[in-house]
Amino acid sequence: MREVDRVVEGTVQEAASLRTELQKQIRNDTGGDVQVPRLGDYATSWLASRIVGLKASSSSRYAEVLDTYVLPYLGDFFVDRITESDVREWQARLARKKSGATVNGALVMLRMVLEDAVQEFDLPKNPSRRVRRLPVRRPTDEEPNLLTGAELGRVLTWLAGKEPDHHPLAATLALTGLRYGEATALKWADLDADAGIIRVRRAQWHGVVSTTKTGTSRTVPLVGELADTLQKHRARLLAHQAAGLGEGWVFPGPDGGLLRPNALRFPLGRALKNCGITKRVSVHGLRRTFNNLARQVAGEIVTRSITGHVTAAMTEHYSHVDAREKLAAASKILLLLAPASQVGDQVGDRANPPISPESEPATTLRIS
Image 1: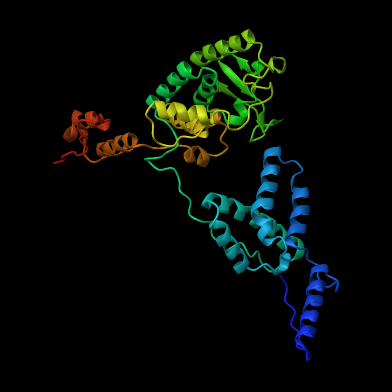
Image 2 (image 1 turned 90 degrees about the horizontal axis):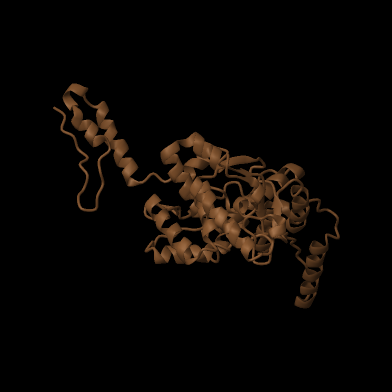
């Protein structure tokens, strides 16, 4: 972490003794000339100042990333002695054990800590600033982490018949676009079937209830089918006198508390398998599914107001424009290539060409 060079005349044993003493001085900072702390000490104070006002999930995640991925490698380095090469070496070592997404998340955390240290100790530069993130596999057209409308219908039908205890939560996520933490923190008082809305006021993370991710409240639609599903769900809870009724939770856990993050993971996996859906779709994929279907039928502004996305970029990130939409858009461009008198009604017919497994849609237009 620091280097001290001394040239001495003497025996090997004397040199080794001096080396031990120098190492001890560096470790204990007995010389008093080091003003900048080690990264481990600085990160502790940095986190203590940062968690004020943070959601419990965020502060816990910060601490987990630092303790697990950053400080075991770089914690003993003095902040002003960390070099870009040190950061690259740390990144490479971590990448041999962890996924690209994990490594990138740790790099972002390290960059945040060092950026504040640069300002606080007037350091020349942040050694992590030029280190690039690793490439990460993103959802593709073949693996978009969402379901089509038909696939979602099959999955919900299967859950309703085979796993009725898990069906209400899956249907809520898929038909409202709520985040998992928001859906599992709903209370019956948040539902207004007459008005057709659900008021989203809070979220939970590992049993800790706080505000929503954006810190704001909003309403989402409560369609009749979902209202009926939740009414039957409540009747079952009352009939079995399920734990947690007194707290008013819509989806209480087995012990009456709030559901854990993986409560729906395996039921959804079984549903996908039994419905013949081989692509990977996570529980969060149900929110992505709603976002994508709502965008197709209602547009971006309405979709954002329901899902709670702050920016259009996030709505776009959750969207998946499939081959049918791309084909329809490309076909409609043909309307611009020739006067209506030349193209005629044939262009209109081809603006939304049908897609079927048996035949490829016509995508060309002869313009004379």
